[in-house]
Amino acid sequence: MKKMVIVIMNIAAVMTIEALTATASDLTPVLQKAQADLSATLTAIDKDLTDAAKKLSAIDRKSDEARKILSAVCKNRAYVYDCAILDMNGKLSLMEPENARKYEGADVSSEAHVKELFKTKAPLVSMVFKALDGLNYIDFEYPIITDKGECVGAVSLLVMHAKLLEGVIAPLVKDKPCKIWVMQADGLCIYDQDPAQVNKNIFTDPIFQSFTDLISLAKTVAKEPNGTGSYEFYKKDLEDKTVVKKDAVWDTVKMPANEWRIVTVEIKENQPVPK
Image (cartoon, rainbow, N blue to C red; front, top):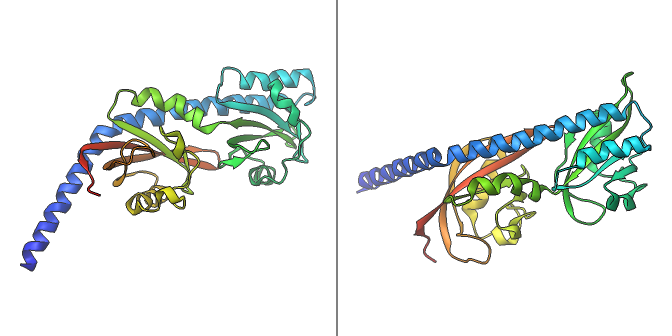
């Protein structure tokens, strides 16, 4: 009897692996497209901030010309909250667009990512943090380095991360039987098609605590840059209490000093989980 149980368990394991392999095959093209499109968006931001920092290194950083440079970085980016110049004291010396100017002169030197930037003098993308208005953002920070190699400040792009990701991801999964969510390495969900899950930490938030396999998967996702797995969770959103099995495939988008995990999920429509 014991041998038969072991055989049955082995068969079940093989079937699970085969199912995940089939899921990976189905989801990988969507995942790869999401990864490529997001990388292209981030590369464009990188280029514009690099160019802006170079231009700002050679001019008066409180001039009208500096404002024009900031405005150009913000232009046609609906996910941008503001673009700013930081002086070497960590103060916001110049800001665009106009509705952000009320924060000019504010001291943000205590922010962890600002400290890190002036320590390393290298570009970085922050983790999610609460900005001066009390809301959550991600900050792209690039040092302003003169031709002589002197750091004279930084240029910052404050981004509404869920809006940025929505613009890239939503068109890819429209009318498809899959969804995508994005996570920081600390377990914070920075994008989900259910807005109620954004800015909640999968490791610690109470809404996830009864879904132990989801937490386990999320911890694996945090540790491994890519992979496959499965978990149980609500079928659609936090309002839909139907629990179903979901198979997942994930990969990574790398940025200066940061990484995002992109998780593509197939909902098993015919596999509701018994209560």
